[in-house]
Amino acid sequence: MNPKAEAPDSRLDFVKWLVVVLLVVVGVVGNQYYSAQPILYRVLALLVIAAVAAYVALQTGKGKAFFVLAKEARAEIRKVVWPTRQETTQTTLIVVAVVLVMALLLWGLDSLLGWLVSLIVG
Image 1 (cartoon, helix red, strand yellow):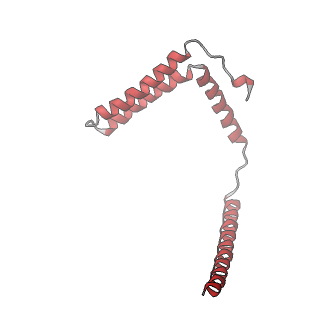
Image 2 (spheres, helix red, strand yellow):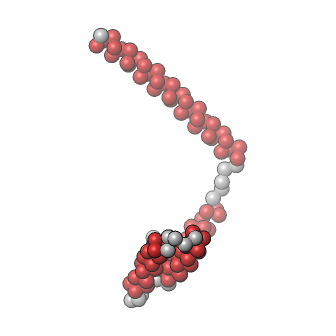
Image 3 (cartoon, rainbow, N blue to C red):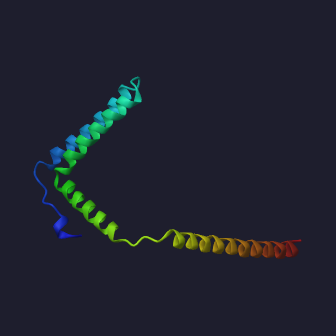
């Protein structure tokens, strides 16, 4: 693991994680309790609670390390050379062809072995 990404744990991290868990519980119970309300209001309330919980979680040592990891992962994704549409289509067609050929071979082998067993068993 990248030593730069490891953040020192604070004494208050436990309390912060407790607040995050409490916010999640409040969101779940509140959503159930207010089930008669329109879903738009409940979704908006859950989004606000989730944003606050994420903000509190990012204030912890592990949350900061996760944020650094996410930024580094995004930078790595930008470096990836993605295949073109033509390359993707050709590769997909090759895979489909190989699967069909193998299916036919296995079907033929199964039929042959089934026929041989039926001759032996009677």
